[in-house]
Image 1: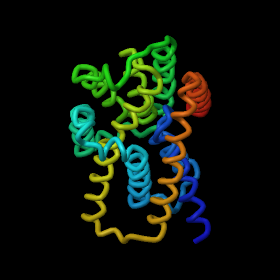
Image 2 (image 1 turned 120 degrees about the vertical axis):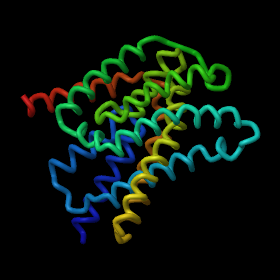
Image 3 (image 1 turned 180 degrees about the vertical axis):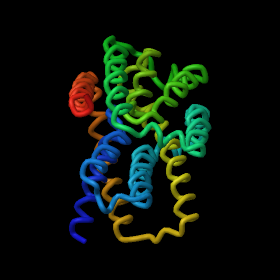
Image 4 (image 1 turned 90 degrees about the horizontal axis):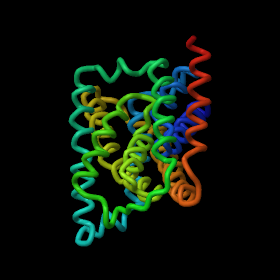
Amino acid sequence: MFQNIIEVLILSAIQGISEFLPISSSAHLILVSSLYEFKSSSLLIDISLHLGSLFAIIHYFKKDLMDIKNNKRLLGLIIVGSIPLIIVGYILYSTGIIYELRNVKVIAWSTLIFGIVLYVADRNHFDKKISSNLNLRSIFFISIFQILSLIPGVSRAGITITAARILRFNRLDSSKISFLLSIPALSGASFLGLKDIFSQSVEFSYLAIIAILTSFIFSFLTVKFFLIYINKFSMNAFVIYRVIIALILFAVIY
């Protein structure tokens, strides 16, 4: 029992921290679960972790989401920007192709390549903001990039921030766009998972409750402190981290 709780806490920390940082949560969860063979890792726990992150990001941006009258245009753009990911994600999920991508070689190469792409996109100082510059054309551009996040190691946060930086949005607003786009993405992933859970008659357990609560805490704190950090510093620390992880994986593979 105690070991299961510790495993869930570790998985919650990985999910909560890596989901909103440009380092790929799916890659970290896949690697850690395969290396340590967590007994508590399951479909139910995986969905619970995603639900915790979803509740956290909704709670953090609750004022923006609740103020529909003033933010109707923004919410509309976020919904439109999520459609390509949901469509392609469902196709890859229903055909089983998504599972073929979950291997260490794919994770290693995507971690390195898209880490470098993030570095290039983040080099210059840009000033575009959500309030005045986010439109249908720009959100569509970001949404096409977001499809790449279905590949483990790419990082949904990383690729959407990269796309926003290419469009010359400042770091803070690029991150906010990424976080807002995570709401439909996490909702879609949770829905598909819950659909499987109900079809398999999986029993709800106390570990799922712990996973939701701890994932919520780690996710909320990550979003809060990342936005403070990114307002003062570049993405270089995350790029360096990705390169180091990729090199370690290459050493193991080759």
